[in-house]
Length: 416
Image (cartoon, rainbow, N blue to C red; front, side, top):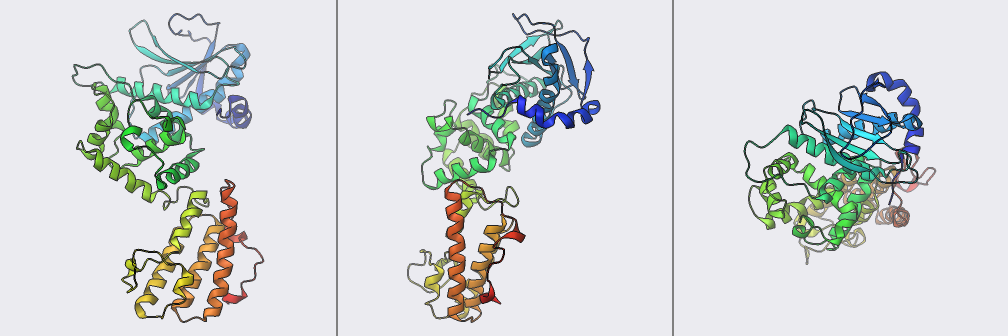
């Protein structure tokens, strides 16, 4: 699926660019224009970012696109450095982006150009800046930045030629950096993992990935897992590739776990997945997967609280808890569960927070000797709110309800 193009991007950023022009780049209209190998280009003028890392060329008909392309590429480079934690010195040459004269062309083309001194310049040609696929452009920028980093950090000695990262890794990195689909991607992949619908990790990490990786969400989530790993393995993986080690699941295991143990790698992946939906990645937003997971948070597992019930591994609904005889152990379990429910919803949107607060109040009311009839009334209210949330997210809606406006005007006299 194609993403937004520079036509819309230019319209969105034009006002900002006029104000930021002086600090973002320097204009060099008379600068000599390098050319990629075996290609004849029309006369083009360039602008260069203030840190000399990005240079954009265009002829007179497309000069208006230079600023939005420059801003897009510079912002991507900044985010690339932030998420990968790679250290860059001043590059020998800026990444050069040439804007062409084609129409209705979504492509972007990457190549290497040599200068007279034998240096190498990353060159990205955009035949039609008005319709280029921005996802593809991000991927080519990620590829150029990886190669730029490898040239700046050559191996001390190696008998093997450097190896390229797998294509899915670069595409996943580019999508992960773009942020736009991050929550949906995590939600989608976690749901597939939860229902055991993902291929084994060893297949996902292979250089030639399965069909599953053709969906852009999965490589993006795999890259998120690598970037968030406490060992910060991304730079180490690139170093091993630069040393000539081919990409493989075993290589990933060696870098992440310091051992050639695929089973341990699987366990790491599973442990990360089990925590994904408990993390608040965007304050005030609740994903469909979080709403689905919320229901499981409402179950009380006797084994977790040393409650003397049969089948302690089986979760009990609060409706079942209402039939139990209150004991000090059960009272503490209910109070603890109320706290866990509130913690799960903390930082989410207002609708989930209010629903969680209602459920927590039910647990606390019953634990503190509240009237069963009042508890059941509030429970019915909370259950209806949960069903409404599930109906909304079943349609793919991301919840953004402000806390102050949730259930405005609702009758809460039963809890007063």
